[in-house]
Length: 405
Image 1 (cartoon, helix red, strand yellow):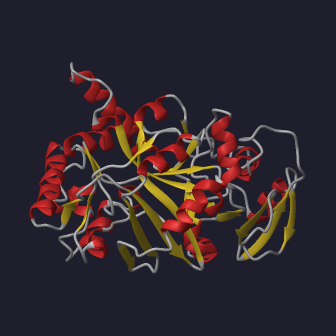
Image 2: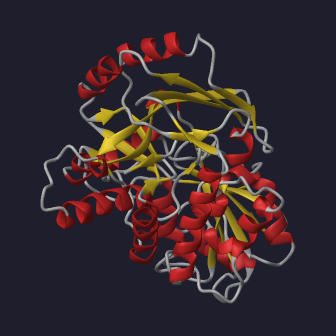
């Protein structure tokens, strides 16, 4: 695959903790407004610019994108974001809960996205893709990186270890307890590009809409430039590339608001016809082909034997959907049904118990997490995962290195 260094916009000295923001799409407007309150340097003023406008303004109104551009210019004019003196790559480490992951911040090529060298495992929504593409073109910048992974390469791992033994350019612990450390790589960047040229494939772990917007921006700029020759900066978009062994996926659990007209006893009876149901469990499945269910103040363990199936059909989340949610609870399309909700694993099984005990849901299902190998196998098969299948933690921070074109 193709990567390259770039002359990034980065936070000025001492400003990284104020600037760095969680990805735009993990917050709603109210949450973003609260998180950015009292902090004019937060990149959320750029990535979620509606927070600085009246609630009556539609989030896709022209004024929203114009406000994002004003906020972006303001951060530069006030010296909060400054331009690096030379094109660089960056090693980026995140530490959370006793584990760490270290990737390389670099620009990836739009052609690799188009030619499936950068592989996908989710469908994008047109409205979300349109929003980020317009945001990218208005700013002429990628403010948030696409989270990529690749199968480990010993040579790259050794080079990262060497770089990260030196003095970092940025090192801070965010309010959520996640430590973020960045090392600048300005020397021998050709060596790094050559090492990644030997990586045959990369996979989008998170940020499908950001990747699509980067590709669309490149396509739009090419069409508008009669002198296009392939060397332009708009051909590239911002990514962070992590070796697969560093990543951990949390489960994405399900809660359903009712039992589709059945009593608890009747639901357990019909459930027992499609999988083994035993009373007991603690809400955390310990192996594949197992789920835990919380119903009527009790945990139950659901299990089923292995069976021949494709990489998508054999996922636990697929089995739950095809054997339980659709036929027994009438959740035919989890993307559109208002009777099912999704709870990221970061919130713990206590959140499932709370939702059921409070009456907000009738039943909850705790799943064993999908593996990184599952995700890559599905992308290699040119298939898509069921909605809300993976929850990656920690989340990448936006604003530590911004690509402009």
